[in-house]
Image 1: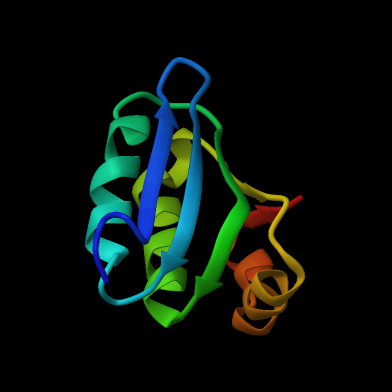
Image 2: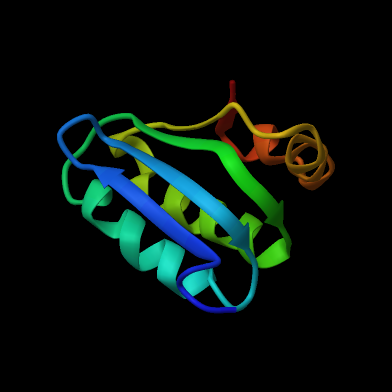
Length: 102
C-alpha cells in the first residue's frame, strides 16, 4: 500500500482527523503519526471514518493506542464509519475500551 491509497486530513484546531482509504498493517504507522499532533493537548478528539473503506486489526490497534495515550486527558470518538467498518468496530468491542461510536 502506498500513501495514495491511505491518507489522513488533520485539523489540529478542531481536534479532528478524517481517515481516507484503507487502514491496515501497511498504513497503521502513518495513521498514528498523522493523528499524533492531536494528542499534544488535552481534550476530545474526533476521527471521521466516513471515507475509510477498509480497516483491519492494525487499524483497531491505532484507535486503542490513541485512546490509551489520551488517558484521563480527553475522549476519543469515531464518527460515520461505513457499515462494514462499523461492524469491525463493533466486533472488536471498541465501545468497551472507551471509544465512542457516532
